Image (tube, rainbow, N blue to C red; front, side, top):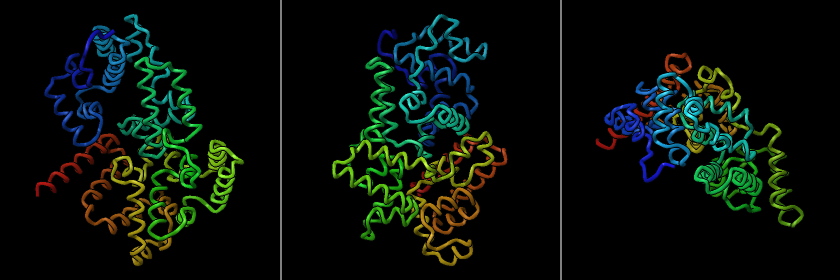
Length: 397
């Protein structure tokens, strides 16, 4: 339908549809490359395009790429969007294009249709995506709601559906089978304790990687480390070991073992960060903790938090001053990070002195977000630019 090889990159389309000058696109592309933010969000934050128009162009982009729309139709529909402030679907209906041809192809719809998430949950995370200016997939990864390999599998199926390589129903069935057999996409399913716990969603991949390193360094069993650091309790470990024995003895299939552990995990084990309850609130920005803010900016990761905990354990006087238990485990550290931003900030300052400048900037931006003085997406852009400029200055020194 598009009739030949066409450049469907966002910047090219914005220029072709005369929505902005090429120089403006190049500037936005440079900032996007430096900050890691989507180029469209950079343009919105620079007030070069409205959110409504951007969404319409992004919809037009993939419909053009997949042959569901011609360039002439896209131009006509976008003109209606700009002149009437319509959404893209209404504009398509007006010019006689099936606006619902894409139904079921969006990432959130595929996650719901394949049983990976529920609709209300996706809707709320979409609100968070709008708040932060980050794509849905990135939000879900940053907040450990989906595993990266599982998300990539879903995106590949989405791509195949849009190209017409497979039908929607087949794509959903493939994703359901993937979830049922592995729990995390295309990673092989084994009866190792660590694999059973991660594939069932009881322990996250990032946490298991940290636990495995600790176990190897201290010559301990992985289950011992997981309980010592609070990722699971003794009862859940006993359950995991029980289903592992049954799976190895042939008394239970791996699929059933994973389902059993997944059911066990539904009793309040997740999410460990307390993030979901705050994200699902309309007051997200006002209630965001420093840890959550640093996670969204990419400054903080679970592995980095583990390093903070390890370093803090050596600072007995600091822990005593902050009224913290020197033997705190990862689960307790996560709770402190989410619920007490002041203590968390002091821990970071003491354990990461080389990043004090960036931390001070993040703390200031976090405070401004909570007070409503700056929008979350704008603050993320400012922090990303600061970090990029700091890294460039360091390399040139």
